[in-house]
Image (cartoon, rainbow, N blue to C red; front, side):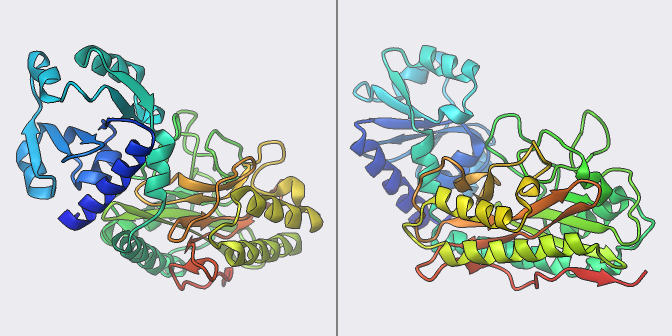
Length: 390
């Protein structure tokens, strides 16, 4: 549960940013942003003035919001007639996260708060949330440790002849038993994810998901993740799973093979390991995100694998790492065109992967914390491909 001290520290950081931009208040309606500052995911909006105390207005459940949140001023959501009177008249420039606010909601609050102007504070909030507190790092370390413990069980239930769907069901069952909350929250519009990916031949299918490996999925309505395809001998099996505990997401990928592995795939895996280590060493404050991606892409190209790096040829993802926290797609992103400088205590899932048509998918992923010495890994699960007897 979010402490009063932690909540106040987060609010104060935001208020300093608002004041620097001459914005008098911020209005949050996205539940995960509200949770970050207020510690409750009830149906509510959160008002944070540039100076003064936040106010949480709750539609449902008011009683639970008061149990969970350290915010001092928690009220029932007012009627339409009373709404504008709740806020000070001198708070006229209001920040909203336009990246997560539907037009309908924007229009509603424009009408409900006449005389105010609304400005976008999406990047401000995302940058603020990208730097994790000690409490958040503890939560992320806990998530990574529990995820690693479930990955360690995979050799007990993976075998040739079962479907990708059967494999994913076994993995998801164990994650859920471990306390995985199931909500893989993503901020990007039109992106969605169910638990994770367990794929073999199905991993060679293209798809909408903004990642290197999509999977065939179970239908054209759910074209992502495990399929009905059967796992064969000597075929790489890629398992890419985020796990959510106490709201915080750790992300990890491991490779498995029943039998032996094609030598080109083995070489690609070795290159992925080298890329991960290069990125890990470079994950220091002041490093430029784009530079890390370009270095990774250059290593893949130098190895003769550039056209397979981070996805199907022609459908490649233009990143090699993404921030994680309360959402799977947080800042920073180690991506082409992304010039943000890394900061201490940002948390990034680094995932160099290759998709080689006709052969399979291969790669690695771990979650790291940016430190002065480079990336600090949050779990100690070995990276090695796990080979199983037929």
